[in-house]
Length: 66
Image (tube, rainbow, N blue to C red):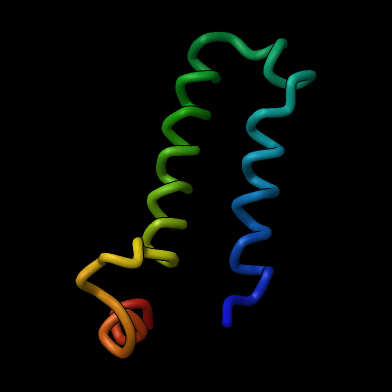
């Protein structure tokens, strides 16, 4: 079973990146950097929680993540 801390970090990161008060003061370069940072975080999240139809499941997934 999944621990909530495995999901909480991405939820906190999304809240941090998409905070309106902070975003409205960013220049375009900062916004692009945040976009790419969020993409990287999303890829990490997808690696931790692959799609159900993913070929890497069970013991093979556990081995790769360790």
